[in-house]
View 1 (cartoon, one colour):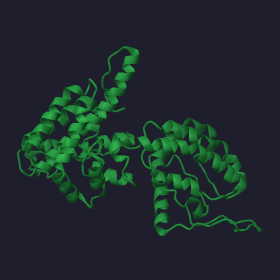
View 2 (cartoon, helix red, strand yellow; view 1 turned 90 degrees about the vertical axis):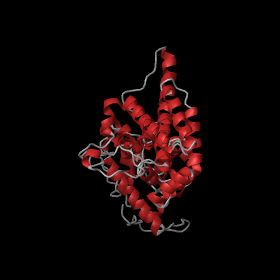
View 3 (spheres, one colour; view 1 turned 45 degrees about the vertical axis):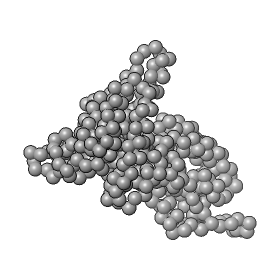
View 4 (cartoon, one colour; view 1 turned 30 degrees about the horizontal axis):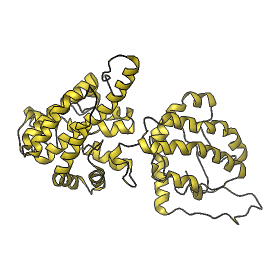
Length: 387
């Protein structure tokens, strides 16, 4: 993406066409977004190199992680791009250099993958405004763009409802980078809990210390949110874990924080082992510190939000190696040491959030499986890995 504009043929006039200028912040956001798209697509797929007026892209802030149920909609929506490629090149020679759509057969065979990778960087906050702000470049190009965006619009609208779990959907201006910091970097769960106001506060907090204060200051409402979530679980697969989650919450509410944290740690490990099986080690650090978080790239955004806190919860800790006791919730430190640095109310709350959040996510999956099972008169079980 460059700041160059298309040269107008002699005789063209700007009269009647209002030119919109990008603010510096919008310009930087657009450049950052385009760079993110290219990085997510990797070296095998190249994005079109547009050299259009910035006014054509005023509010386009592109693309975050994929919505699991909507990839097919996006794939269908971008199909028109394949058919109009030749027309674009005739009308706007030199403006578009697209390796992604150069080979129609290749693009068709990888359409789902292209759609997935594009939507992995989608920021839905300004898409509606973006579509309205696309300026006319030529009459033919404008007609083709109109047809394309008419297909994309419903797909994007459908995504918004299912892009995040329910407790995050009402947060205004939500950016995935903020969610990722909370769930992956700091290991604080956000999937299905806590309530929207608390989740918003955690995401917008100025840093880890402030988030820890929120966990300590709002522990009662967070506990209530956890209880609501687990008592709402309806699947047979999750049912055996619910009484233990409730017992841990009862202990927390009664002031027995150490007991609550110990039970939460055991519950988290039982859930993770039952669900992931041998694949659990793909999503947790190894003792040598060489395992990366690359396996999390396999997840859709909802899966990522649900499972990312495991990475911090399972950071390696060995008493025999003289490792320092971590100050945030650690499943390993909870199981293998007794220290006020690890056992405290904030960590008990964090551990229970993880256990209850996992149960909420897995109950969603299990209910869906059991519904399918009713149609086939079999018995639904958790898969060996995430779905």
